[in-house]
Length: 197
Image 1 (cartoon, one colour):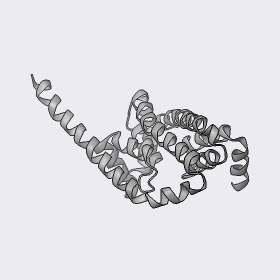
Image 2 (cartoon, helix red, strand yellow):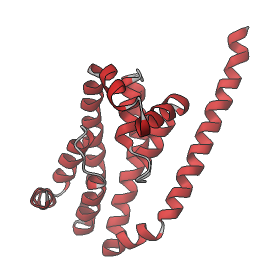
Image 3 (cartoon, one colour):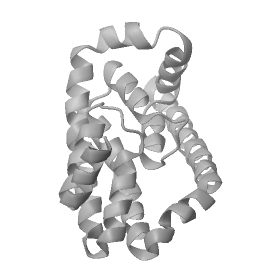
């Protein structure tokens, strides 16, 4: 894996695109795209914006492939991975909170919010392709843009800055979740009287 990552670093922005795509089709590599994006942005600040664009494109293309794979075997996925234990809890979260869970985990790099599990549950449970891709784009664009900016501006100090603000990102995730969930509930209540008329 180290040799593969070294090869991707040597490819620069194209390597970021390839890793984002590979990671998004479901091949486990937690934080790999984030790390590579930072490394390339630090090494080549002039290419930071291109890295962010290609990371987003790779992630969305890979997720589109992932969506089709999970939709084809959606029922089997749900039966195998979400009927007990942790998988059941994730399925309940997606069922209850919808695409909010996908957006938060796509936007913020927090280990206890596993994006692929939430994405797989959402795909298997019938979320439309357009909605799925739009929510992912809404999370990925600012995430990768911020990482590229930090890498280009802070250079070698980027990792230390992120580690120093880890709890702030956790608090932001909780705040975003609460705000988005509140908006969804308010929207549901606003539409209910209209549906009864």
